[in-house]
Image (cartoon, rainbow, N blue to C red; front, side, top):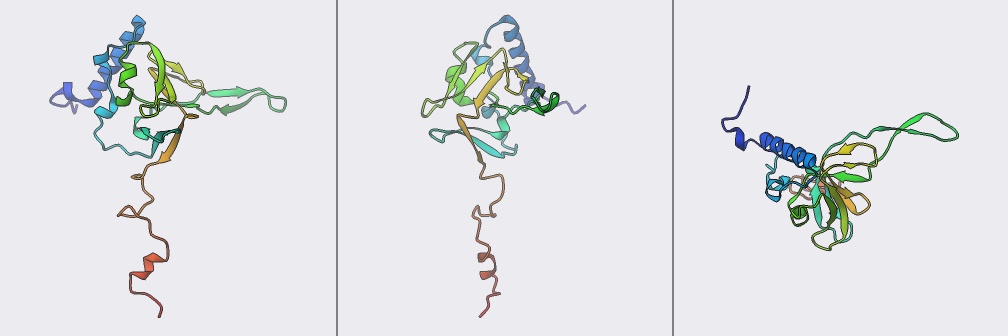
Length: 185
């Protein structure tokens, strides 16, 4: 069954325990205890692909990477209008939902059920959280709801996601043939 020798140290089991703790604290109407919060960036193994960075729009500090996003499926929304009465379209999400990250620690460990998230560098409001869950603008519920507002952040393509040469420098098209000895004299 591919059970690890020490189940207690298995990341999948630790995430399951964390989800159970969130469910229990939600049922009690309380925020989870500070020592029970799992900050995912402290447990990351570094093997996940990072497509883009999420940065504060004001000071450009990196707040999260795409590997910490919580995927959710937008619901179908019916659009009522004079031309089309039952056209179903997907609503766009106004937030990125993320796992708890270490820069959020001072706010999340206060024991409040919900609150605002501020950039740790410039103190600009960049999002909000609600342990009992939050409904996205697309209609889907995410529990716990820890979100970064797309209007307050920028998505920047990660430097490690490709598009650059092996040394990290992209050369102009003409430079590739100059060093190969095929120069026209």
